[in-house]
Length: 389
Ligand code: NAD
Ligand code: UDP
Image (tube, rainbow, N blue to C red):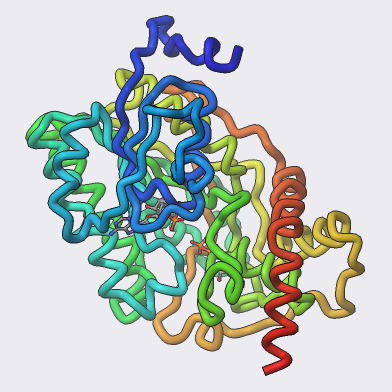
């Protein structure tokens, strides 16, 4: 019944099965998108990535019921001539490939800029030259800081939505100075957005740009020392999960005062499927995809995760569940932060009728249950090996 339900688009027209070239399909978002497309649609996926651990259950080998529906192509889009052929073979290209963990932006700014701008160029070019549709993943970080962040802390205008709500077609992009290399990622993403928009305006490229606002859920990033480098610093969900699994305090960067809105990955994926299947409504648009109702400070997030993890694991929280660290200690020089991220939802609501559903508490319960089941034993083993050596 699920498959039948999505066979008509939002205008009541039948949806023809598409071939989709999905670049970065082996990542967090890609793995959920592949699962959803396999379970609930008839589209065919050419999954491109340098690794496939997160989609192994779908591609290595593909289970019999998915024969002919999904194939994995291990390639680095930096330097592989097979890329153009795959884009030509597809009706639609979705580009998710990127370096997108803040710990890299100020410590590996060249890789960050190359990955988010230079490496995306051929993808845009091949789509434009071959008249193929492109869905490109940008980021909410292109908004940078809010206008209100430049007002004094207790200024009443900071409470006015015009000073903080982020609107695709109206809000400015406000980044810090060049020495704050944090903004290398946002700036590279902004320039690729402008290039795609210009390809649309000057050469008729059919494009959609997605700006995710902190999508989170199972399979996000890695747990350091278990399925990623011990010294690696993933995004906040995985950092805090790692601390909870190891029974160490959660580290609040610069007081944990920054605000974020978190959306459940499975809600967000529904928005992407609507974009895929409703090109007439999605082409030419930039979409915020987030959950404005799930706003917390990072400190509040740490508190909630501590409580939820205690419930799902049955382990009592530490006496001191959090500690403060400075951003220069945690991320090194050149770090800076987005103060607040509330997405305006009018465009996606009007074009695709999409709304997020899952409250933060519920999505943390599901996600931390997954983290505990998937990683607890492995973390214990790794900790006892580390203490033995
Ligand atoms: P991810 O790191 O899990 O996935 C990215 C994937 O791209 C990885 O599997 C990686 O191996 C692959 N990749 C990178 N460079 C490649 C290359 N040169 N050739 C082939 N494959 C390559 O990240 P994600 O969270 O799934 O994010 C996907 C996209 O969404 C990114 O563009 C990111 O900037 C954007 N985004 C995500 C979020 C979020 O909340 N998760 C927020 C803002 C923006
Ligand atoms: N953060 C934190 N402790 C950590 C990891 C991250 O306080 O262990 C903060 C970080 O400084 C930022 C927020 O959590 O304010 C979200 O960080 P994330 O890496 O998820 O990415 P961002 O939302 O900044 O793109």
